[in-house]
Length: 117
Length: 111
Image (tube, rainbow over all chains, first blue to last red; front, side):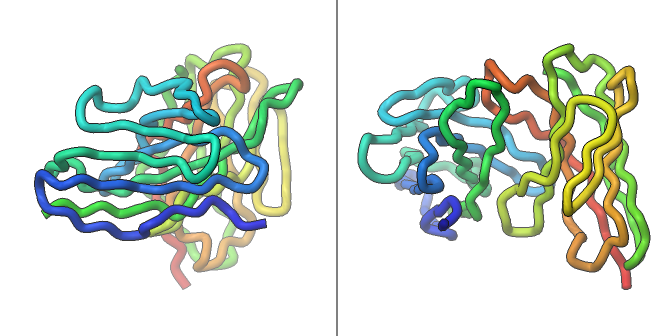
């Protein structure tokens, strides 16, 4: 069973360009999360999605950032008009459907390292 | 969300037992304690989770005192490959799903 897959692993963009980061959750997982990690810091939550729905985007900047998780295909984190401050590692995690007795583990992908020149 | 405090870094030698303590004084009744491990250039990996007393799996043990205001991750007989950052997270099983990571503890294992 393949783990969470992210691509590209490394992405270089110039200021003002768009960055598209893709995440394929583990098979059978219908919950996707995006996190951002700056150097020497912990991960910061950005957005939580289920298929075709954004559940919690409280950690996502209001401008330039958007996320989707379509019925078919991977989840996409899109950053428009990138700036140098967007340089970071972006991690995607997935988890299975809710269980009645609660509790879940999030499984993380290897991340996409975005460098904005 | 309960705030966690853990040492910034720790050093150890191969074969030793390592204990990393995390403080979470304002943990709520429905909060669980979860530890993740992160190697350089990789995503975090779940290690262990518990609510009270002691939990053990093939990787580590988690000790939680009765007042639950702290927890200790115990790694038996560490090896060089255990060099990583270890994060202590506290949060409810249900409700908000986002994980809140602190700065973690950077464990360096020497030969």
